[in-house]
Image 1 (cartoon, helix red, strand yellow):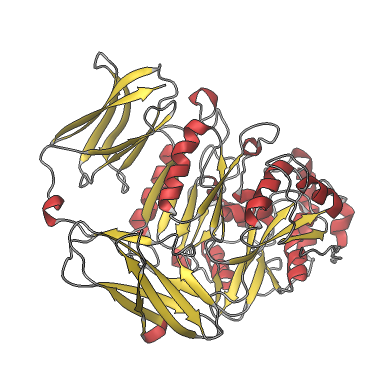
Image 2 (tube, rainbow, N blue to C red):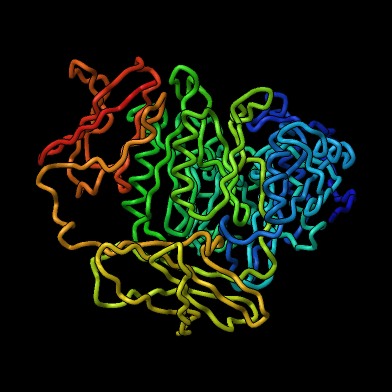
Length: 593
């Protein structure tokens, strides 16, 4: 068992005099915290913790799907959920539990509740120290690297809550892990931010809501100096290496009370966005769709191509209610822990669809569901879930592999070029690309050839039409370190299809329904069509008399050719799903149970 217990003494100055020792603070600002804001803001300006000027090197901010050495949690409210996180995460990396009493946490982990005892405490480290709340994502440190893959540093923003002990957590973690900490606390480099409102692709792109502008602007309560949009973007570049024109800022949502983007979207790789979706016209759906269309119109991935979009339904509350009449439920608030993804779940009728979409989008990952919607630990009612209470710390020596996946092709003669950007601080000794057309057989190995600027390449032989090709990349550093991408390979992979050119002709018979699931259903219905070519599509649900009872889609299909409907409010029975376009119609039976 890897364990140590220590109390980290930091120079908190006037923070200590605030006397804030509560550990049950909400995700939002508690009413009794409002009077604490001025003293907190002023003390933060004089804290003098960490390195208070931006790096002299160009930093690279780690993406969440990269390899991590540690997952950090604070042990307070929602211990049943925390225990389940520990159980899953300790199989992948060290779990650092910041707590006030190691013995009481150990006792809880080893009792029979919440899935049974965790008798093996290997990979669990206890760190006794002060904190105010469970929301580690928001106040915990970001990870930045020098020269992309060299020295690891932690970055500590000004936390947008008057919680001095939470705000000092980056220093506690840095001390415990022996990692130097940069701090954005001092003017003119002061920057207020929160981890739930930030996601990065690992290569200079990041997303946030405009909450970051509000809190650093003239109405900000925690900032030392007022910043314009351009100044905020400059600071993100200086502190984190986020290129100003690649810092994507989105309108805040009307009903998301905390305005954290991790409640409805997530980068799952450099070119793929997981997007929550409400039923058409409901709740925050219109603003979310407007934000997404702005992203697709104005911003490409780091590869210079439009983002791939994977949509996943946003579960309703009881009675098919959505925010503001219900809590904000989401599957996007999941966390990568190396080869595992820990996902919040709600009710089986929704989870069946949400978990299936995640598994299809992240092949090879172990998907661990944790119920976040049932008493006594209904964490989602506090506007947060799994991502909100966890924070990953990157490894000290990442072996970085960036690759733009190959897409479906009609090519049956020319080999398929696989290119990757590969780096390690010791240099790369070799790289291989593995491919197969049959997952039941062994992968074929092809050496990759080093080119200029750390780019490596290899080719998959051309295949016949109708073939599905699976592949992954493996690299070995001069130090001996090895890495694969996807990180779950060979259990997970990228894939593409070699299409039949005849099958590429638009079917004059109209849209084709390729899948409807789950069917029967009591709530969410996911409808997938063959490529509609951007045509306007009308999708309706009709009763036994042919009357329209629900209009699901009336316009071009989304990029993933998938639409969702929530049938919760409909009576049980048989319905007809009708899909129509200018070229024709398709129908299939749907059972509501």
